[in-house]
Amino acid sequence: MQRDSSDSLPPPTAIADDQTERRTVRHPSFAEALRFWLKLGFIGFGGPAGQIAIMQAELVERRRWISQSRFLHALNFCMLLPGPEATQLAIYIGWLLHKTWGGIVAGALFVIPSIFVLWTLSFVYAAYGNMPWIVAIFSGLKPAVMAIVAVALIRIGRRALRNLVMWAIAVLAFVGIFFFKIPFPAIILGAVIVGFLGEQVWPTQFVVKGIDDSESLLSDNAETPSHVKSSRFRTIRLSFVCLFVWLAPIFLVGLWLGPNHTLFNEGLFFSKAAIVTFGGAYAVLPYVAQQAVDKFGWLQPGQMIDGLALAETTPGPLIMVLQFVGFMGGWNQPGVLSPLLAGTLGGLITTWITFVPSFFWILLGAPHIERLRGNTKLTAALSTVTAAVVGVILNLAVWFGLHAIFPEGEAINWLALVLGIVLFAGIWRWNWSIVPVVIGSGIAGWLYQFALR
Figure (cartoon, helix red, strand yellow):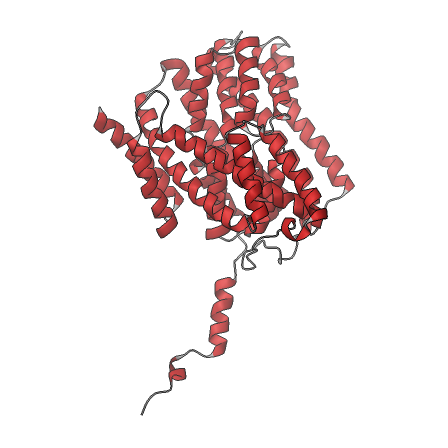
């Protein structure tokens, strides 16, 4: 007798239970989130494009702690702020998951590993000059960054560019910043204006919400966390606390060493730079280089270039190059302190002054941005900003790829080209994990340079 095919199927309740189990994403504990942010601090190579790509892969696609639409909503807000946008994005998501302390821990662990790595490299550079084995290891990381950014760019683009208008905005943003060198803030401001006007003229094309993953922990359909609500008292209290925490080290250094010491001048200078750094490290570097080299004499022009190279090859935000500037300023002009102590304190105060405002922007502004997620005018503006950001990330990816594959004054880097293609295929096709990719690339770079020698 022929067996009924329905006999081999599980009962409908079992199917439903299985689907519910697959769709349920458990809220991560504070310790789980802490471990992830610490890992991100160690593997966050490649500047903002690489770090955003890692968060896209880990938080949106793998862990599903946040949906694509809310991830882009947070990213767009961070793009409008001065300071390192990838750090601010980590603070934003950490705050959504675990309130104020979640944001503080996320941002701190995003930066702290790079502080120690860059301090070590800065000391080695100042005391002994460039070391070939360090350069060899970091040369292998560039293909990994290329692959990670390329995969993230494709995935974000597929979700964010939902119609021809958004595609056109992304293309115009890339052309403007890559070929015509239009400043990043001008591109983002233009996208905001176009979004507000487009919502009035053509709302069906500009109010683009994209695809929201309702299975994610933080999705558009999820209940809004209670801590998202803000109050006037919280705003005033937070403002006073952040201003005190941000500026107190400058006044303490001034009382200790006097207003003419290098460390005090670094604190004042970088406090001003921290609130005008729209567009990330590349936007602020010309201003910092001019002042640090020509006005203050903290370092030589060649040292500024070397500092950028060190920052590009270490985990953490690219704006960490400012820590190198602060270290070299203290090392070269130590005053009554030893060069090592002055350099260490110069790097620390520069890092502190640069990053503390990012916590203030997010913890103060994010609750208001979250409450406006359903506003069509804001949705239209942020949709166009998302499209423009795709073009900007493409610009960073192309810039990074060209410099990695075609080094200035050198022949084509075959390691970067071949390894980059292999890693891209592995991440895209077989979902290779980020950590083995980064570690393996560093080892490959060292072996390649060793073989050449």
